[in-house]
Amino acid sequence: MLGLTLVWLVPVWALVFGHGLERGYGLVAFALAALTYLPTLARYGRSWVWSLALPLIAVFYMAATGASAVNHWRGVGANWKDRAYGAG
View 1 (cartoon, rainbow, N blue to C red):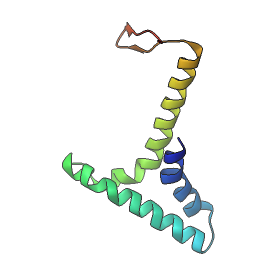
View 2: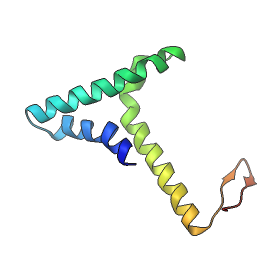
View 3: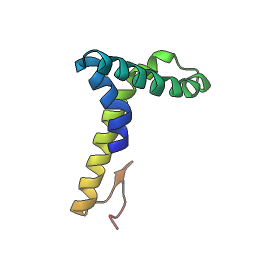
């Protein structure tokens, strides 16, 4: 979660709410992170525009990870395609 926050959310935060050099650093950090994803997009024949959605994708992934952790702590197993799997 910390890694996703540092790579995808902090640069966007700095880009939107930063001033001066902070905004520039956010732009550079986000651009570098997005550029590293371009080969994957090219491999699957997707537009480079998808790289701009990566912060939103990171938020979704963090929410799914958090929900999974809460379910594990509650002792609730996974349920996928109408099949239930034990928590332990």
